[in-house]
Length: 121
Image 1 (cartoon, rainbow, N blue to C red):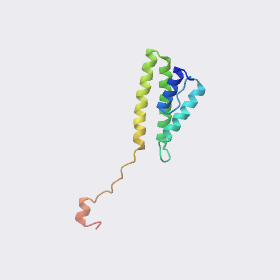
Image 2: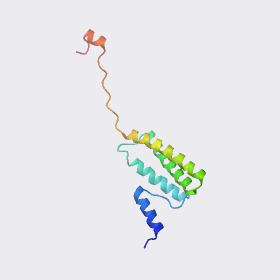
Image 3: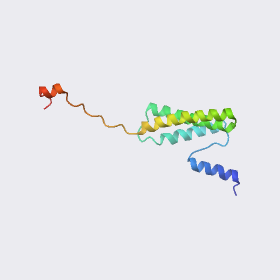
């Protein structure tokens, strides 16, 4: 039978859909960063670009830093956590935009000089 704390943590993990550390140490850091990188990279349907890879690494690190800061539970650390989350949201928006298909490029129309000269007919 689970106690209330275990149920709450299990529920939070289920809600977020990813690994959430209970302790903050080098082992859980690597586990968390690997999980987040895989989660973000799985959203890319084609081969990721260098910019997308850099954004994925930044998002994982920013989220880890926010969790670490929030875990300390002091006013200063909560401010730092809020700043990390703000930056995370900016990078996440750039990442989301990078996933959108590019609009098709229009072929340049003929110039007025080409039309008058009868070129391209």
